[in-house]
Image (cartoon, rainbow, N blue to C red):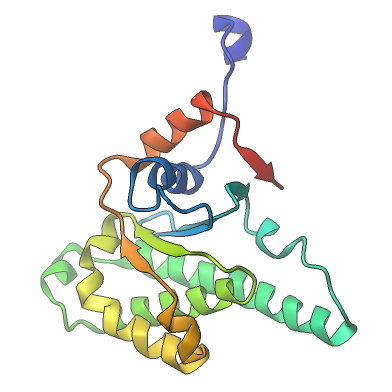
Amino acid sequence: IIEEEFHKPTYINNDVNCFILGERHYGLCSSFKDVIGIYLDDNCGTSVLMDDKAFLGKHAIFKDIKCLSDAFYNHIHYYRKSYLKTIKDLSILCSCFEEEWFDMPDHYAWQDLGCLIGKLIAILLSNFNPKIIVLGGNLSRFYPYFSYAIDNCLYKFLHPEVLLNMILVTSMVKNPKPLGASTLCKKKIHVKM
């Protein structure tokens, strides 16, 4: 409808994908082609860019895995279900955050948040090998409150060598979502559905 009315190309995407595109092109991720973004706000989600190709949607993240055996397929199926449950739990928790908790770094909710983020990172690393993971959204600015819980969870689920090569940062870009949306207009983004 918009293209017909204004005779201009129109691109539609969700806010989490626009966030990671903004980070990829204007943030700390600008020199990386393999990036995972985790957005922590009322609308939680993940976005994955591998070799600058976007994997969109909750189901696309585990869609194109080449299974070597039935046992491997069952393993991936388990991780996919765990991913969907963890995203749901994370979204529920983030939507419940109260403003007074922002002044309470020892509140139990921060530990729960860190554990869920750590679990989510471990699940994503079972399928992807990003060079950098970026946390964004309103709650990412409180990273010091929940970083210890992330670390504890990751040490439980991942091999120490994986952790040595992992870069985890919080967004430093002002307004990454509109910047990411603007990149959709500037260049053709490869999308994997």
